[in-house]
Length: 107
Image (cartoon, rainbow, N blue to C red; front, side):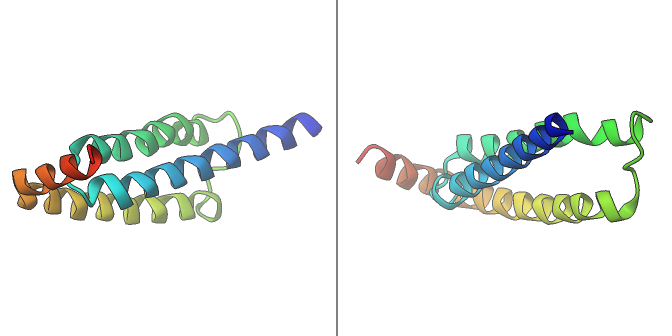
């Protein structure tokens, strides 16, 4: 049981760390028009979700109910909406936003 508790805490820590990293990328990089920040901010959580979510439906354990996965689905919807809004802002900002971002990044 101690090993399972360890896994739960470790997984929660990685989820929190990914959320903080993505928030930092969005707050600084994406707001400054840096495409690499948006791409990294999208890939990181998508990879985590792609690894973790299918295991809930493969029959390895019985945690496929809405009360367990519902918050994940809700968070995913919110995340996708935010990623699309940021993408729209990046595409409309064009080179000017990217140039401003580069100037801030390089001092």
